[in-house]
Image (cartoon, rainbow, N blue to C red):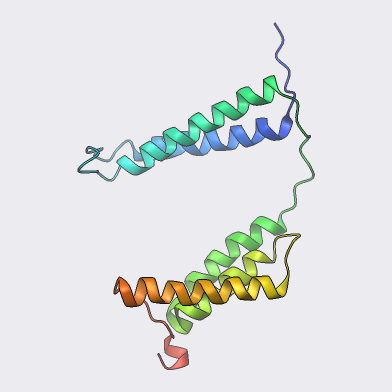
Length: 153
């Protein structure tokens, strides 16, 4: 019996999910698991990795059963923008503070979308920066500078 892949996009998405899930379980195996009430350091990566692997297997099975679109050309600049925005956030957090770092994160990562529009991205960035400053710094008391050392914070 020959198995044919009818949905290449679902197949490769499933392979990626399954690989990341198996890797999470593999790297968490050397740590204590704990229980649901007293979770050890391996609990979260093991549970999340197992769920990701199961979702991946379901997508691979779906790719064999249902027809779907082909894989489009892969562009590197979109993942680079999204990953780079996270690195930029980490680099900007101390010197410029939470507000500026979050605005940079949202604007750079949103620019990767074909649906990018400046007004919507700025509104999202402003809302996220204000709500994060209130939630994490004021309400939870986390020691994150709202305005960094370069801005006199």
